[in-house]
Image (cartoon, rainbow, N blue to C red):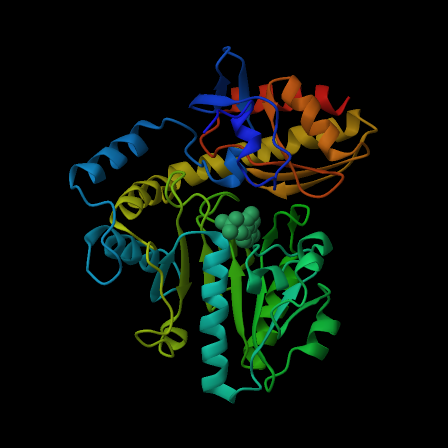
Length: 393
Ligand SMILES: Cc1ncc(COP(=O)(O)O)c(C=O)c1O
């Protein structure tokens, strides 16, 4: 075999327009290339690296797990780290049962399957429809892409999985389409991420919760991006004053290792029997041990208060940038999750920010998405906002 001239682009399937630099190292809230250039991180690996990089506690947890020699044994055998983490998630939430998997899309696929089985138990085969909302992003697998509102993600793969429909974020419309006979679940992100960083209206969320209860329909909350401290509370739903039937998590759970989870009430869990669903890797002892450490760090009132306080400050700074710059149309968000609508194409601003030493992501053609590691200090947030303003121009 001959060495490819550019091994990074020759062998990998070309699904991403990757940034030109090659990251070789990271520490705290900064990433570095081989030539010593550094970037302040307002992307966190797309909302994954809540504790930043090279975190001493995450490192120690990884090494402790390796010391047991147990990276993986499969779910056919009991191991303590996953059981301990499930206990903690149950104690900290509405849920009674937890299923672990490996990614966000997998968590949502799992939740959809649980909802389908529950629907069948409640109302027979007709009670199978899943309703998602305008602007939703729930993943790229077959069930989840059908619940994802982006034509470019959906259209090349039609026909999509059946019985999954997207409707407007409008109670009148939803009241027409949600039916006791045909609907098993509504799925939504309390703060939509990829769809433009949209904090759903509290009244809307509460009324939708009431409507789903009234029609005997499950509410699945997708907190894969907005959960686990990102909006300043452990779970985003706490700020809306509602409780879901199922909740999905993933991104930050295991300090950058792949992990997802589906949390559910006992009434929902009762329909699932051994063999109904499964995963080879999900909740293995290495990832679950690290995830216990991440959970303990994030589920600390001081940690969450930092996100709430500094996130509010970040939002105020972004509004000031909007006042100063005619190129900023809108600012939306909560905690360490903000969207900035800009007149220029978002990808151009992201590229200019990179030249300024700031990593950003977008959420649509004209929306910048700010997702700093949750440990970022005010001093670094300030540097980031200055670089952002320079990149917006
Ligand atoms: C809200 C939400 N749901 C689901 C997913 C899919 O997660 P994954 O990419 O781990 O499959 C994402 C990913 O960005 C997300 O933001």
